[in-house]
Length: 172
Image (cartoon, rainbow, N blue to C red; front, side, top):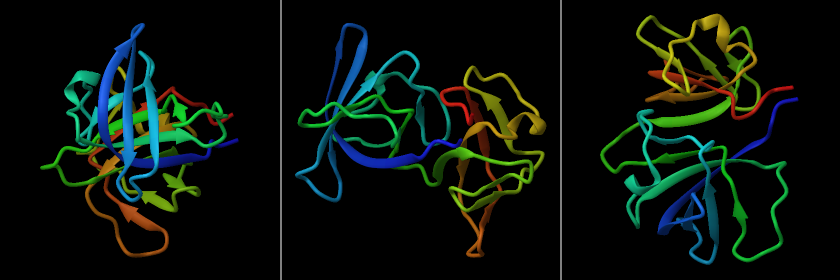
């Protein structure tokens, strides 16, 4: 069963570290009354918009982040809500492009995202440790996909610049 992944776009209010866990307090860009606390563990991939790993201290206060969370994970009944995201992207101001996370089939299609990938020789394909992976290893795995544009067709199609195979979630 595929996870249901929700995208949260937010601005960073504060960053701290407590007992080895990064704590990022955020506020919604669209509704300033919506706050959330993201807990960043050693298992939480923290990447730039072009797919490079960074530490929590590299994200500035007032920086824009995109967090991906499993919407099936229960949240504690506290205010503001607190969760450990599957992935956090620091959305640098000068970087263009999009990032999505989801499972893709043998045709490189994601039903959940309604997105078809056209993988080229120039597409960088790696795991979270940076080790190169082959196209066949992408099938049924949760992928972090970096791309610049899509077609306006249904489904949307893209030539990704980078794909990271993640073991954060399984599709089983």
